[in-house]
Image (cartoon, rainbow, N blue to C red; front, side):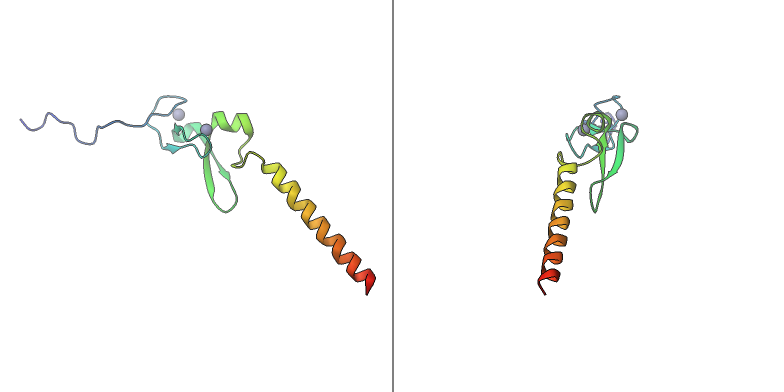
Length: 91
Ligand SMILES: [Zn+2]
Ligand SMILES: [Zn+2]
């Protein structure tokens, strides 16, 4: 008596790809995934886990417009360089 309840066997989050106990949520779709069904990716300063479904859909980047942001930064750098060059010419 008293041992009928199995301790710590509550609702376990299952990997949505293979059904095994999940290690954590996908950084993009929040679906629980296990360690084998996700990839670790650099999302800037931190490392994120992204499930294989999201990796195949949008690449292993956190932001949907990851490349757009990079292009934006490049544009900004080029603009600043042009401004610096213009200032240097004016002097
Ligand atoms: Zn899995
Ligand atoms: Zn995902």
